[in-house]
Picture 1 (cartoon, helix red, strand yellow):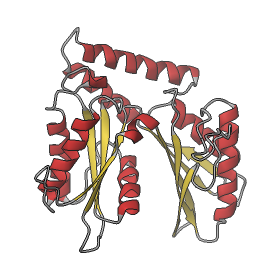
Picture 2 (cartoon, rainbow, N blue to C red):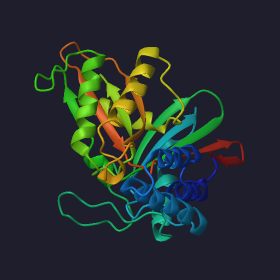
Picture 3 (cartoon, rainbow, N blue to C red):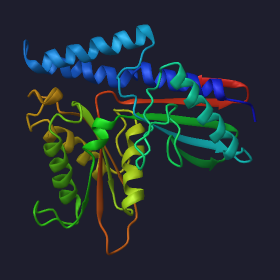
Length: 290
C-alpha cells in the first residue's frame, strides 16, 4: 500500500475550509425563508460570507476545527496500523499548516498536546474491511459547541411522556433541540440513533450525519419521521444562532440499531451549520475527493 499522508492532509484541508455544496445550498435556501431585515437574515448573511471567504482563502470555516473523526473502509490486506500512522502524521502536518487548531487537551493534566494527537481516541478513527480494491475515507470535523448539546435518552421517559415507540423518539429529539436553543450554532442538523448500547448509539448518531441532505432513510417510517422532526424543530422559533426565526434545523437523519430488551436508548447528535465532512477515494494510484 502506498503512503497516503499527503492525500490525507489534502482531505483535512478540504474538510476544514470548503463546506459541501449541499450544505451551503441549504443555508442559502434558509436565508430566503427568513424575514428581510431580521436578525436571522443577518446571521445567515454572515455565515454565507464566511463560507465564501474560507473557500477563497483556504482558511478554516470555523475557529473551532473540532474533533477529527475518520471513517475508513479499506480493502482486504491493507494494514490498519499503517493507515493509522499516516492519518496521525497528516493530522500533525495539517495542524502545522493551520487547517486544524490544536484541540487535543488531556482531561487529567489539562495540557494541550499542541499537535492534535492524544491517546487513544484523538483523532478518532473507525476501520471497516470491505470487498473490492477501493479505499474510501470519510472525515467529519465535529465542533465542540454542537457536541456539547448532544443528548441521550433512555425510554420510557415519564417526564416527557415518551414511550418506547417512534413518537417517543420524536418527543425526546425535540426536547434536545429545545434545550440546545442557539448554543449549538443553529441552524444545524440532527443525527438520531434508536437502539444499541450507550456507546454504539452515540457512534451511530454521528455517522448518520455523513449522509447527503436529500438522502432519506430507506425505511419509510424513519424517512417520514426525519421530515417531521425537521418541520417541528423549525416551529420552535429558535432560529439561526438562537436569534429567532423559521430555521433551526436544516435536516434530520435517523438510523436504528438492535438493542437489548431491557434498554431503549435514543441518542441525538447535533451538528452546527458548519457541517464539515468530505470523502477521499483511492483506486490504485488515483485519489479523488468529494
